[in-house]
Image 1 (tube, rainbow, N blue to C red):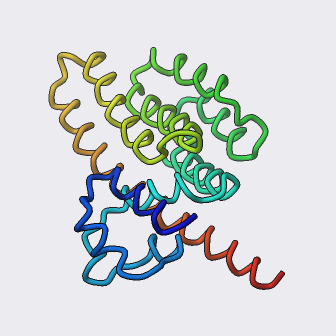
Image 2: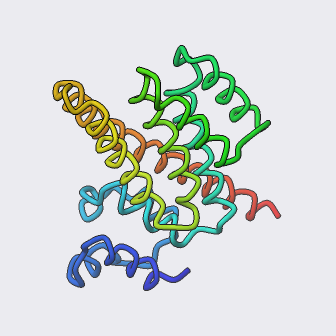
Length: 200
């Protein structure tokens, strides 16, 4: 992919022509776009860098990053959640016994009827969005999933405004942390691929 194509992806993230000229002061690899932190790049958010990655990297590398993100969400929200059915599903997911979206949605629907709604919806939606992200504008889809989770929680807990506010606050923190984790994964995956290419 060329710098022009990469810069078009950043332009879609609300960077104007002058800003793009400033950012792309020289030809850069995708790894450089993800890792560059000098004065011109210091304020480029992780979500914009990830957008470029998920729109320009080979699909095989996108899948690695998306699966790592999904696994992270399953470990964080499902593996030790206190709901036996969900924990069993999480174990199967992480062992690669069952990584189907159908099963994930079925578990989420089952768990949505329990008091553990918040964590379930958050994890199931994050997993689904991370998987879907490889064929869509990845990071934007994953971040929107958290927002949808907050709306679902708000509908289910209409009388518990304090809980909803807490979920929104937690969701924003989780969103930022997940973007940074995905960026780190993307950098590591690209670096490994580039090293393997050089050795070949």
